[in-house]
Image 1: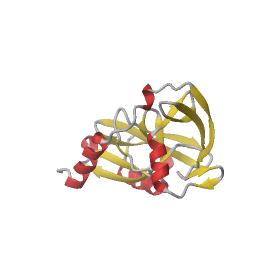
Image 2: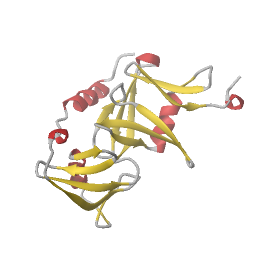
Image 3: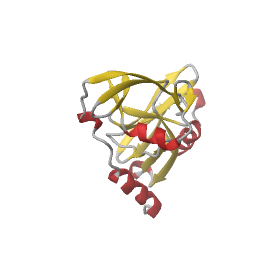
Image 4: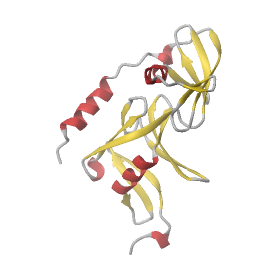
Length: 186
């Protein structure tokens, strides 16, 4: 199956996106700021919702993860913020191809587009409320895959004979979970 032009356009846009080199910035001024990213991807400053999407989108470009803490980093300062779960949410997904030739593109709530591959793996953790699926966006920053996108992802996945539910993207196999023997179709 040939890739659609919109899929390829998104892929090109993802590769061409220029981001500030926050990984190279090591400012001397380090502190904290009352900014929190909620589990649903909403940004808050001093308890108030950041209503201007452009502000959250800009801050997302200077976000960095260091030793388990999240920071907004500029050449002159590094400010710790709170993140309830993951800093981003994957709100949409495009699929191209089938089986091991499949490619999956995820779009986040702040406009990042990422191809799931060896550098941007899909991982699933277990919690008391069920599976928590993520895709790595950049430099350790992950996006929680929204419930509706996860359902679409699982619908595309394969059920292996050993009970693993997995999906391929960009030549990589990602395990989404396992099915109990009782749940497997005969």
